[in-house]
Length: 126
Picture 1 (cartoon, rainbow, N blue to C red):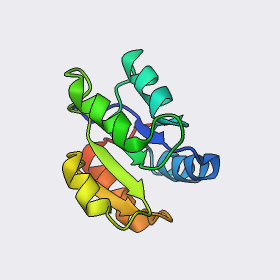
Picture 2 (picture 1 turned 45 degrees about the horizontal axis):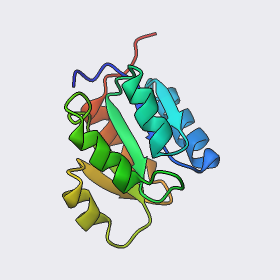
Picture 3 (picture 1 turned 90 degrees about the horizontal axis):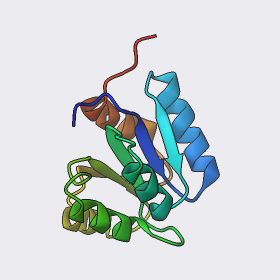
């Protein structure tokens, strides 16, 4: 991936999407949100090319695990890096199984998250 797309935040909690999205925008990153894995897959298949996906694991409709499995099975989407964002105690195991680049705990820790975003996404120049 070239690092020029937005960060895609996939989370069923609108407060998390808003708070994390605002932080990323303040640090110069474009943001797109999706409320579940199904919406995220639809956006990706419609042509969205994010530099990174911040993915909640537990969501209704299509959870993060099933989203990531479908993403990995699609050659056009598989290379988009994913950071799992979860409060699950088995996050490291899930991240390894799903080939995520990292996992970060909930509640969000911006000091942990920002370097991961910086590693995969270029900042916009205004």
